[in-house]
Amino acid sequence: MDTNNWLLDTLIYYRQIEFFTRYQDFSNKELVDEVKKLAKKLYSNTYERFFDEQNDWYVLNLDRQRVFDIDFGSIHDDCAIEGINQSIRQLVNVAEISRGFFTPNKVTSYYINECHGKIYSEKDLLNYFDSLPPDENIYHFYKNIVDFEIDGSRHLIVGSYDPSLTAFQINKIIINTGYQFYLGEFGDPTPMLLLNQEEAQKLEQERGLRANVIRRVGDTSWLNLPSNL
Image 1 (tube, helix red, strand yellow):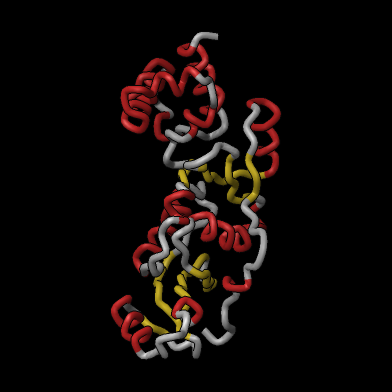
Image 2 (cartoon, one colour):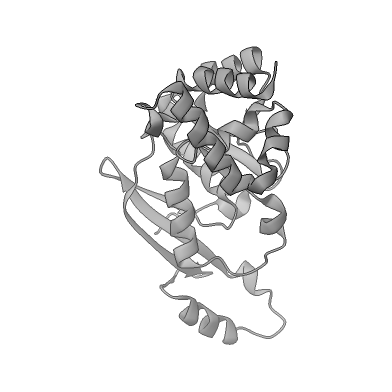
């Protein structure tokens, strides 16, 4: 199948399963033209060679209401302190692709020290670090907490530069909806999206796309929250 016909067939398929909903009033031709514009913006003038591979992920990554790309290489190179605004931004990023199944409000963020005292700014956190003995590992002495409500119930998660860690914790909160955040098997950047099990199976069987529910391997004790917050 030539690339243009493949692209049209691909868009028609995904339109039927709630992708590219912002373009629901577009004709097929208008949608193809718009997606090519988005691809040129994201992939530069070489976008056609990405489409030539006829890999659906290159198309799905253009739907920013459904898919969020995670650059794990960049995350793991960054050892900075998790910023309060950054943690809130990650929560918002996850909410934006949640299809309405994760709608936090009254969102705040702060740090806690080893005594579970709250620290509300990065400046005060650095002052706290200055008070520690010089041989102490400062990263053992704080956590960044994101505090929010859903349907009147309060929830806390540990903030992280890694959006998949944020989504991993949110998966526990929304598990009863039947939906979970998945990571696509697509390299780096890696697509993250919300699916239910039936949708994930359908994508693999009909389109050859594999995605896995976000789970953590190894020690996750640092995500444990104190009971007195």
